[in-house]
Image (cartoon, rainbow, N blue to C red):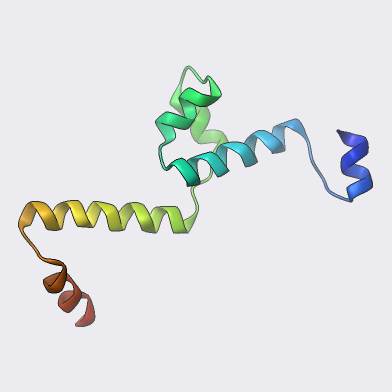
Length: 87
């Protein structure tokens, strides 16, 4: 792997690949628990060390959570749009 990486002019290692794979999986799957299971980690804390959640993923999660609260409170999408427009 080092030879191929050197020829390609990139800095890569098994450790870096694990970080990249874990981060990509968490941001695509959206579930740290599922990724932890896929990687075979006994403790989710291990997965959280390797995975970095992107701002886009955080935003999508916050938006989804907001939708859950809106539904529970009976707030319509139209009411939510008006509230966001006035902020």
